Image (cartoon, rainbow, N blue to C red; front, side, top):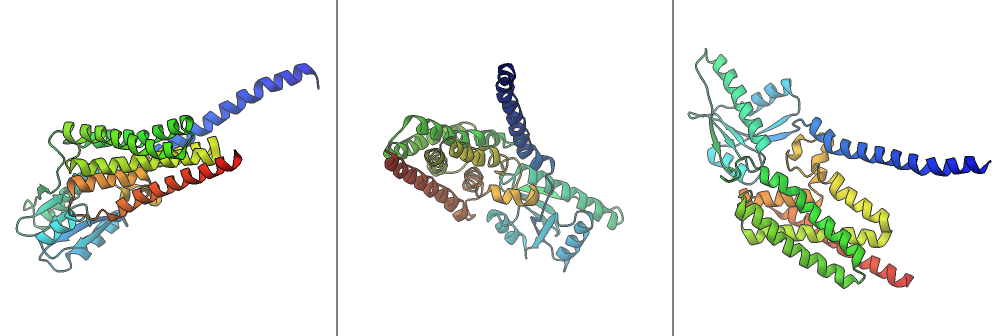
Length: 330
């Protein structure tokens, strides 16, 4: 083989490799971000029903299953108070009340998209009942039990703010893995940077924009825990597997976890159970927990707290064992 041919090969090989890698990476990222949203459809969305009419729930379930099989799961409550309690405890996204004063109970704080879906269902049901009653107008009053803040009535602040929540931890992790050598330094930066960043982030989302409405210091704890968990996992992954570990953790938390966190859409609208998976990653648990603290103080938060603590433990373990490996190599 001539020297000229060898030079041509060495010239084109890295060029083609980089071009193909970029194409694959960009296509993968686009698929992960766009596919769940493009294929969003309701799957077993829990909706409450209360009515003095017997067997109304099974009738509605059968009716809606004919149009969209498996889209909705109607749960019957004995009265209005029970339905309101079900919404407050995050058992259902809302409820249809079929009594002397028909109304639809919403919880926009849980998901503006789901609140709009429930409103559409009430309009559709009202049209059907109007036709069944000989044209007598049947409409549902709208009662939002968990409205968004007046400063952010569309809930856009938390949607936009979810990106800094995950980016903060990744940035701390990258900088810590590059500049810090001691394990104690990595644990310290995860805690200090997490607290300082969370004080600022929650101040913006809560005190300024009004996108969050819960206890400020409790929300700071949530965000600080999320940042610390992500940053430690990033530093630990980088310490154990170098660049491959760093990219793997960032890919899981950002490329996979960000679109599946359930920020714009509730988990029941994602295909193939991806929304449920996203709730067990740091960003999904963090956003869900912030919503519960802000809008549903009666709802259980144990799963979300345990998820964040578990990731913190995973990150701490990775940092610890990466330190042991480095000590052996030295």
